Image 1 (cartoon, rainbow, N blue to C red):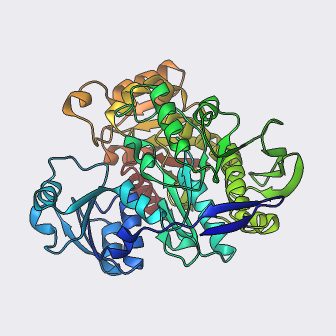
Image 2 (cartoon, rainbow, N blue to C red):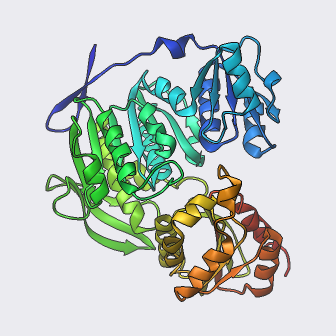
Image 3 (cartoon, rainbow, N blue to C red):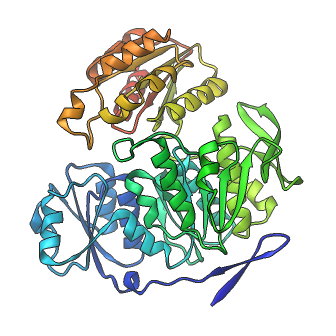
Length: 481
């Protein structure tokens, strides 16, 4: 059966999909259920009536929310956590093969799936919209899901971050669209089956599972090849690696950017109140004027990609501009934690050099602080080692950089011995920056309390638990200092 989708000058026809495996699933156990993607998947399964159990190594607010929603979650990972009548066991990318629950599931003959494989099954039921790229996936995915929701199209969605305007990181709607992040780590996105997809950018990252940049580009090329001929791929027309990734796609390809060669072009950019306003053109014709909802030039690009996907999803231009303009972002993306005594505290997920640079520039443009303090927690020793010099150059917009120990996850002990936070601090100083290594969060908080003054802004950055520092500083500035 074919469904028509109006796209302005022509009608795009996309296949309706179904997957009996998901519909027959009644009980799912998720190992590592507290991770950002896994907890979104768990909530989505709960919303569709699946009995969800899971395990996590430590308590968290995410685990508490899932428990209140009806999931049976055990702390600690043991073979007996898996229910006897479990249909499917799903595990996150952070789970090793030696995990006792994973080993037990295999021994018992229970079907075992990676997170991305289960996500792919859910996507196969709908018209899939997948957003890939080294940076900007969560924000752009959330933009698309939010506008579709506001436009009354009732999408299902999974975002790798909490979206307050959507009630969380995931949701189940009666509409035909399924919107999801497409993560390249461990080539996870090759398990998805999108009809529409975006490649926002392609850079070096996850070099613990990729050989080099060319290997990463090849993975994105394989992702592009998964889009059916009747589908659509939207790519960053100013990103050479993204262009290479799309060079063998069988579907129609459209580009976005600020140059004349792009299908979707932002023109006449101007700054209003710390955010950009741009006229968006499609194939040389004015499409709409957009007040980009979030600070930073990088969010102009995210918005262009979202506009293209939303247009092909059938949302009129005026609705795209209205609803996208009211989007307030995702949690841990330049999130305002508190302001008092002339001090502003933000928290951000940035953990790659390009993200850090773009976010710090956006913060300076929007807030114009007297001094910009960046508390950066490196994420993984391998990423820090491979990208050390790029990291060191990315803090140019910060007046002061404070660095605790590297967040240790997935790496081996051998990798841990190869690089340290002191190495990063040394490189930042070599590049002319002011940086200080402070081993613990407590030491960082004490240093900030002794040195912050009115007009200063502190941003905590990283994919680990560095947000705890932001919370401590907010509590401090909220008291009579």
